[in-house]
Structures are given as C-alpha cells and as structure tokens.
Amino acid sequence: MALSENEVLAGLTEIIVEETGIDADDVELGKSFTDDLDIDSLSMMTIVAQAEDKFSVTIPDDEVKNLATVGDAVSFITGAQA
Amino acid sequence: MERPDVVVTGLGATTPLGGDIASTWKAVLAGTPGARTMDNDWADKYGIPVNFAATIAVQPSEVLTVPETKRMDPSAQYALVAAREAWADAGAPEVDKTRLGTVVSSGIGGIWTTLNGWDTLRERGARRVLPMTVPMLMPNSATAYISLEFGAQAGAHALVSACASGAEAIGYAVDMIRSGRADIVVAGGTEATIHPLPISAFAASRTLSTRNDDPAGASRPYDIDRDGFVIGEGAAIVVLESASHAAQRGAKVYAKVAGVGLTSDGYHITSPDPEGTGQIRAMSAALQDAGVSAKDVSHVNAHATSTKVGDLIEARSIRAVLGDDADHVALSATKSMTGHLLGGAGALETVFTVLALHDRQAPPTINVANPDPELTLDLVRDTPRALPQTDTAAINNSFGFGGHNVALVVTSA
Image (cartoon, rainbow over all chains, first blue to last red; front, side, top):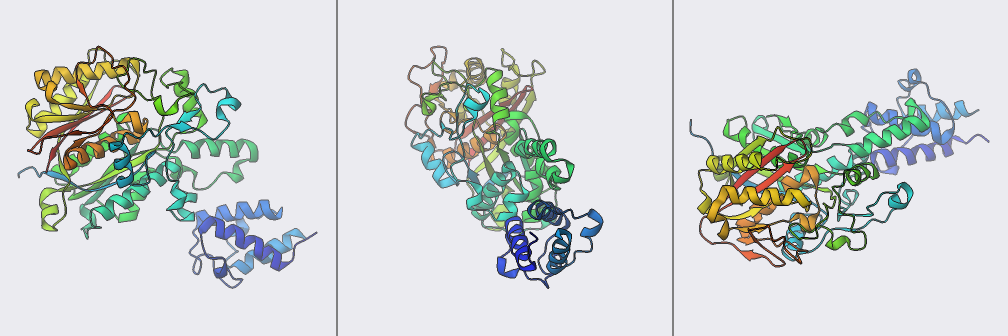
C-alpha cells in the first residue's frame, strides 16, 4: 500500500538526518536542499539512493535536478509509488 | 638565509591506549598493553589464525559529527580527531593560511571504503556505490581533510612509505619549514586497517603474532619468545613550527625536531637489509643533520615491531651508529603496548620521543620476560627511566616494507 505524504516526509527526514546530522525539526516541505539545508550534490546522490531503497521507487538522475525542495522530493516519491 | 629551527608546539593522538595524548602517554608510562581479543567472528568465519588486535580506545563517532563519519574513511576520521587536538594544543594559532601546510600519511589508505564499496557494487550494482568513495579511499584523504579543516594553503601532502609513513611525513614537514615554504605544518600519520583482509594478508606473510590466548602479552620486542607484531590502529599528529614563528606568538615548545634521515635499502620488498646499512645511514644522516653526536643521545624509540629478524637487525644498526655511547642510551620499544599502527606508528612514536624529552622519562618496554641474548642495548623494561635533565637528544626510528628507513633526531627545547 502506498505511503501518505506525511509518511514519506517522515521516512525522508530519517534519511536526511542520518546522512547529514541536520536536526529533524529543520526538515520541512518548503526547505531547499541546497540553500536551506546546505546539502551538496554528493550528499544528495546518497540521499536519493537511500530513498530509492526505502520507498521502492526509482528516481532517475534527470529527475534529481528538479527536486529543489523537500516538498518536491516528497511529491515525486509519493507519485512514483502509485 | 639561515636555516630555521623546527619546533613542536602541538600534539594530538587517538590510539589503542586512549582517545587523546594525555591518556595515551599516561598509559604508556604505566606499561599498559593495548591489544585485546576482538569482539567479532572474523577468525572463525574466515579461518584467520589471529583473533586479537590493538583496537582504538575511543571510537571517532563519539567526537565527530554524523556527516564527518559518513564522509570519511576511519583512517581520515582518526587523523582529524588527532589533528584537532594538536591544533588546540598549539593554541589554535592565527596564521597566514598560505604559510600553513599539512603532511599526513597513511601506509594503506581507506581500505574499509575500498572493500565496502566493492561489496556494494557486487551485491547491489553501480547505482548504489557511494559518490564519496574516491575521496574516502584515496591515501591523501586525511591530509586533504585536515587542510580543509584549517584552511591550509602551503601544500597538503601524503607520503606513502608503509610503516615509515608517519615518520616520513614529519620529516617532510620539517623540510617544508626549513626550505621556507611554510611557517607551520600539521604533520603525522594514521591507519585503520583492523579489517579481515589486511589481517589475513599479514598473517599469510607470517609477520603477525598468533598468541591468541594472551593478546596483552603478544607484542614482545626483544623477548626471546617474540613471534611477530600485533596490528594496531589510530593516528598521531604534531604541529611543527619554525622556532621564530613560535617565539613570536609566545607558543609553548615541547622539543625540537633537529635532524631528519631518509634512506632506502634497495634490497628486498619486505625484509630489511640484514646488514642494516640503510638503517645505519638513516640514523647517521639524522644525527649529522641535527648537529649532534652519539654522546649527546640519551634515548632511542626503536621501530622494534616484535618480529624475530627485524628487531635484531635494528638493534645491531643502533649499536653500529652509536658505538660505545649506546651503553648510556635508554632503548624503548613502545609497540609492546600500542601494537603496530603501520602508517600511524612513526608519528605516534615521534610524539612519544618528544614527550620523553619534554618529561625526561623514557617509556618502558613490556612483555620482555627473557631478553634475546643477542640484544646488547640497554632496554628500558617495565617502568619508565629518567633521562638526563641537561640538553639531550633522542632518535626515533621507523622502517617500512619496501626498504624505507626514517630516523628523526629530537632534541630538548
């Protein structure tokens, strides 16, 4: 069964916290990965790989550049599950 | 231009004996063994004949941030921990970044990263290989991260010479300051090779002790029953500085690194030249470079890994260099306690040599129940030995597979 947006956000937050050490409270839908969370492209690729495993989805490399915010990623993953 | 004197103004380490310098040095003076039985199933699972090692006392995850532990191989993590301590110990000096360098070596580099990456690739495919794999596995990773940490721009180097790497790094750092390329250099060595592959490989080459029932007694340099080295892990870092730069900012000075001797055997890929000619030339060159003679030397920290052949070749070489003056030299083999940190060993033993002169105490050698009768030197056993309060000099020896010989002469400040 597909996860809700809130469940995806919670799972993605876990991955981001584990990879970067950022406080979980700082991970919000409107936050930009690069500008707000200071996540660089190498960490982003690692987060994407972990998200693919966790949510059983594929996030094509071409798509990653469109995922500017946490919300973009949550929307993409939620949609890709369906 | 007069050649600058090079002094030590900061020390840092994380070792099998402690997570910092103070705890490590205290344990060494107390004759504490660092080797222990490993809490993993490697020996049974892979049929490795050795189930113990001198594992690090404090995991770097206890002091580093999550991204730091994610993005660095353990070898670089150990070095960063030690570098931060050394830099703080030096007073975190405000320096011209273009005059600040780093030379931090590893004998092997990021082997955990390399082998974990290979497992990931085979089991899960290329898309799961970490994008940070190359910067984590490269042997210059530690020096690169430390140069980032302090903004060092005078050069970030990593000399690789097996078990001499840490000492060679310090020797090269001395040259950087003497040649005028830097005022301060953060230098040392690190290793994180307590992994089943290197342990299997060293065991296959019959260089490791197999004293599984007595890990604490396994590293016994110069004892007649020695049967090989004990693999260790950790890092040691020194802050080296031109004497004038240190004086200008009122830095405390531990000692002077006064002489560097770097030679190669050109003889055999693993065995030292049985005549010790490369080792003799390294020690002689370091003494000459320091402008001191054999009678000025009161202490030697030997490479002495606890192998049958290597220890005696070194002992004979020391005798050949110091002659009758060797009789009043306190000989210490600290690997009896720390195990063999490979690329970290030469740096850690330089730190011990510096502290020995600073505190005027030569560390003990443990586990020598029956000294090899062929040893003609004055081995410090079980408890520390007082060194002269007058100006004095010490030699730290480090040798490596490939025929690398490094001797550093340290003099009291």
